[in-house]
Amino acid sequence: MRIAVLREGAPGERRVAATPETVKKFIALGADVAVEAGAGEGASFADSDYAAAGAAVGDRAATLAGAGIVLGVQGPDPASLGGAAPGAWIVAGLNPFGDRARVDAYAQAGYEALAMEFMPRITRAQSMDILSSQSNLAGYKAVLDAAAEYGRAFPMMMTAAGTVSAAKAFVMGVGVAGLQAIATARRLGAQVSATDVRSATKEQIQSLGAKPIFVENVAGIEGEGAGGYAGEMTPEYQKAQAELVSGHIAKQDIVITTALIPGRPAPRLISDAQIATMRPGSVIVDLAVESGGNVEGSVAGEVVTRHGVRIVGHRNVAGRLPADASALFSRNLYNFLSTFWDKEAGKPVLDEEIGDAVRLTKDGQVVNQRLLGA
Image (cartoon, rainbow, N blue to C red; front, side):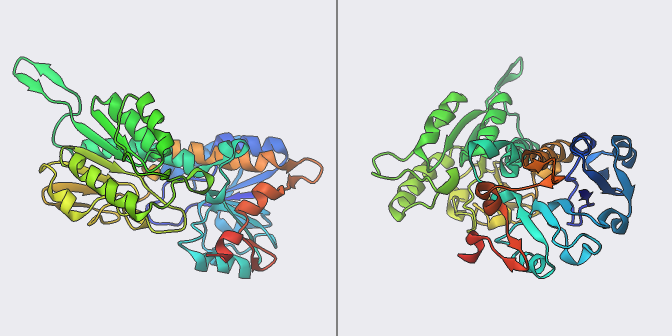
């Protein structure tokens, strides 16, 4: 089995889908690994490192020649995959809902596209979950981005010249990114509070030393969607939460929003009117900006100012830590493929539970039920 590792083509993408570490592991399984020249440069992995690990390093045509599996961070352009074996697996983050045309093109070309972000959130697939590994880094980086834009210090400082008050940070959405944001803000010395639509997260917030901010007395609202993701809130809950958050947000220096709903636009959590109540110099980081944004007025790829408040909308936040993001992402891919590796067949053979969840296309057709039902 020939595994091809491609250089990413998306603007600003510095991650790579395999590191010298995982190249060695794939070769140990019996695979032949080819890496496109320069694939790891953005993440500080040199071509010589891949060659030393046993990979063949060459141009794209040589890398793809006869490849049965193509690894990517973001889905490669279907037109750029000439030379790959018929029915080759495309294993990457494929943004199935946001880039359906590319999925259709994979089907037309006869490739079997496997979307890593569709990995089911079950215990045995945790080590394969790219959303969790990348969200963890995004939550950490979001706090650093907030600190970079904030014109004051995070921790309380008692000096001969007077006392500097601790920053007040509020995290909205307590998934993987939110939990890491809480932990990082706490380590930097901020007073941290957090909220989520899932009542089960209250204990998680408290365990990290932050204050939970939750709507009470709205019966039957758990906010738990499929697969452990947050679901959509009822109008009653949205109204109650808006009132609670409005009063709390006006007192905050830093707000980080992380709320996403798979396959749908990100929920709007902060309105322009709420931004106007915040102190000038405050900072909001919108981690959902590429999915429509949690914050009114946030702009993907930009830092904008509204009512004196800085709204940070960086794209691909995990990718701004390319070395660690690549290391974790590549291990997710290796864990996925190695779990199903059949030594006699010399290739991975997927089971029904995980295979059907991540497989988008096969035999020229789009086959994933989540896409067919969208």
